[in-house]
Every structure is written in C-alpha cells, then in structure tokens.
Length: 341
Image (cartoon, rainbow, N blue to C red; front, side, top):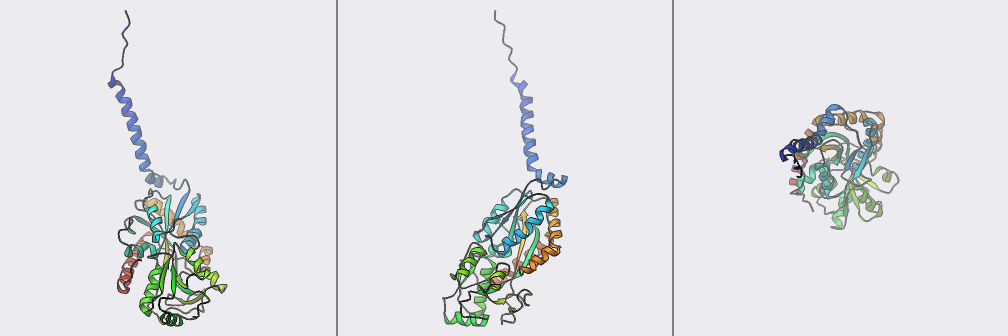
C-alpha cells in the first residue's frame, strides 16, 4: 500500500506571498520617497547632477550653466553635467525637467525669454513656468545689445531705422527662437520705429551667431557674453545697449535713452529650476552653494568680463521676480501686438 503524499495546504503559502508582496511594496515606497529621505539624511547628492540647458552651446544660457557647473561640482562633491537641449523656444529642455523625478539630480538652466515669454506667446504648452518648476537661484542678468554685420552701412540706431524704412522688408534679424526675448525685443523696436525687419528664428544664440557672422542675417539683439569677442575683433558692430545706462564693458555704445528709445529697456536673466515637488532641503542645499559661488570675486569678475552681472536671487526672490516679469511682458506683448510665428 502506497504511502499517501502529504500536500501542504495552499493557505500555508499565503503568509510567504504576503511577505513578498509587502517587501515589494516597501521597496517601491522607499524608492518613491527616496528624494525626501536623501534630503533629510544629508546624502544628497550621491551621484552626478545634470543641468539641462534650454539653448545650444555658445549662448549666454549655456555660458551661465558652464560658469556654475564646475564650482558647483566641487561644492557638491559630485560631477555636474551640462546637457544642451535646444529647440521649441525652450520647451524641449523644459519638458525634460518638468517630467523628471523631483530628486535634485535633473535641473533646468533656463533663459528668461523662454520661461516668461514663451508661455505668453504659445498656447497649449505641455509645461507651465509656475506649476511645473521650483525656483532654485538666478545666476546671471544682462541687458541686451543690438549688433549688425559690419558690411551693413549703418553706424547708429537712427541710421539703422532710416535704412530699414528706405529698404522695407529687406533687413532680417536673428533670434534664439520664437518667443525668445531677442524676438520680442526686436519686434518691440519694429513697433516703436515703424520698421519691418524680418524675424529669422534659430535653435539658440550659438547658431544665430554663426549665421550673423557669416552674413546670412543682418542683425540681432542679444546679451553681451556671446558678442564681446566678436565686437572686440571688429566682426560685429554694436549700435545700442537696451538699458537706461551704458554698459561698463561697452563704454562707447549708447544706452537706449541716448539712442532715442528710452522705452527699449530690456534685460535678460538666466536661472536654475528644479522639478516641482523637489524637497526643500535639496533646494536649500543647491541655492546655498550657488550663493557662495556667486559671491566669490572670481565668479563676479568672469560675469563682468562677459558683459553680464552675477545677480543672485534666492528661490523666494526668483519666484517673485518671475511673476513680475510675466505681468510686465504680457502687457508689452499685448500693446505691441506681438505673435508667435
């Protein structure tokens, strides 16, 4: 007679299964709350940090990111990698960071024109400048400079306006993209002067500068950093600085009021953002280290050489300034009847 095989009741295996499921859920929960845990235990960062840049290499947004990345890497004890994601008037980079895990390892270095003007000009964006981002710090601020190719027969803003009116639809200008401050400020000049200078958008200041230097476009209005070397070499001719006063690094270039356009007062700023929901401790760590870096003489001197200002703003100040800029540019865009192309 065969001995009966003793089977374990199915229910006897359930506790083990429940334990396994519980362990899995616990692991998932730990992973989900890891950003807060890392922030609290002081282990942030424990791997490389990526700065997603909304413009191509060569422009001020890129320069701002690279100026801060090296000293920030030393301060954090981890590599800080610059990842250029140009295009979509800043939307490609913004989407990457807005959708990233809010743990402080994927950050956005954004240009003000893209962050406060793109949302005002382009409907149905997949990101929101307020809802989707946590301000970290402002890094650089700078007025803009209107420059022309040297072969263009104008030496002042007044002469440029006269030439544009005498040759309607002949002149064109480069910008870093639709919705950029370069785009809006030049359209503002068109409105003020009654000119029709045609817009040619690029995926960042770098590519725009390449075509301007090559003679494919006639002029641009942009921040000083990518211009200074070319101006010094005589490859570009500056006509006006879009601020109330002259720029110390371009003492011979008139301010907007001096050139006859006092309301052409346009400055850009370049700031760092984290995805919304990033723990406060992580934001505090980042902004604290950035403030220390920006207070150094080396950083301030480098910014000055580029024609910019190391203008630190903490998260609260940046959020307030950003809101004021959204209100200001909404009025300008409406009054100047500026549209995305």
